[in-house]
Length: 193
Image (cartoon, rainbow, N blue to C red; front, top):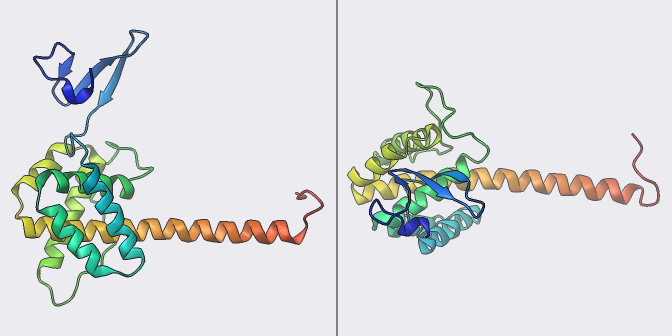
């Protein structure tokens, strides 16, 4: 039985947000299922990735249109937020955030747009809640915000995720350059330490 088919009445072990799944050796494996995006919308995730790539290629209009499209449907918005927070929190242990700590997003609000600071604040709250493992807060937030605000929040998260990925691409490029320089300098002898 797949996790998507498991319900309280399906005969599987169901415990609300946490599932107990039996593997082939009949041992219990704990599995946390995200409340933010219980069913992954692969189309929404593909559009989210395309929007990130567009920002890294300075195509802001495509990314804004993608955020507007993603915000129009609850499931798509939740899938986009799940992917973006996963990118932004990669390497950060979920649930390890101390109470009172608020994570920041890498986004500079447009000076003339009064909605930007609000969207940035909500994006910080969503990212902080995701880091703290508070999926219920993220879900509630997405359910209560107007579509336009969700779109603005997605734009903030898209810019932040694009910046993070661009940073790592730059680090990888610098590392590759250093590797090529080191190997080109002396191709016959091993590196001496």
